[in-house]
Length: 264
Image (cartoon, rainbow, N blue to C red):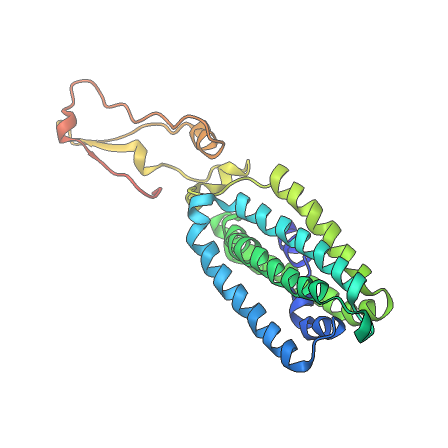
């Protein structure tokens, strides 16, 4: 839920809802405002797809850090361009600075889409134990909605009174968010949902893992190796892989069927 707050505290809906207003303050007419806004949404779609394609290779944490960190950098650029060139008379305009303001908005959404909007949403669904996962996701979405509501209600007044300084709120929170992801949140890539509780230090609710079960065809007995609860932790933290099940002496390994896959 903390990352849900951080993700929306990048100011993504402020840029989305007030994009035309921001472009107008940079001196662009209504035609360019519409073009830029359409292009901005298109960038989001493209980088959502990119994030979805690479997420299972890079992991959640790297993408989340890239997403929040990229948003922070883009917001710094956007704030600088708005502070320097917004609402200036025509003879004092700097076309390069105005274009940089638009480019910063596009950079922002690219970073947000590939990191926060893809990896973050998947991460929310992986945090909670099975029996409360639905409620946990609903609570995370509630945090997102409430955070957006507060920022959007304040944006018009903030832009009218403090202008570009409103961006400082988003810059500070997203900057701190990078450290939060790095030092607090664990990696969840490749961990089955049923085993996720162990990664977060909770009680392991899995009774038996399929990789610990085999059938001895000589005795027709189902043999279960006791699960070492440290195995999953070592995998999640990059340690050695768990040891394989030990078959009883005298059994024919060629006649052993091992049930592997999801926990049972």
